[in-house]
Amino acid sequence: MAVYSPVARAVFVGDALTTRNVLTGRAGAAPAPFTDDPAQALASLDRIAGLDAEWVLPGHGTPWHGSPQAAVDAVRAAAG
Image (cartoon, rainbow, N blue to C red; front, side, top):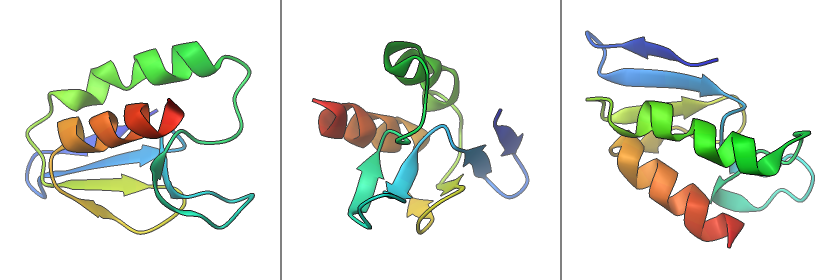
């Protein structure tokens, strides 16, 4: 689940992505490490990619300052 606030230009993404891996402590945008279906989790990011926001706020890690599309691109790159 994600919550988009147009007024704050922010999207709260919970565990849709992370900027700090809770298992390794590694910093940087990446898929959240716990999911039953990694391919579906990555596909779900398409739902937030086009939002007009400048902050992506994950449940774990620091806020991402930039577009949701840039965050999604970074997560996909990290996923390999």
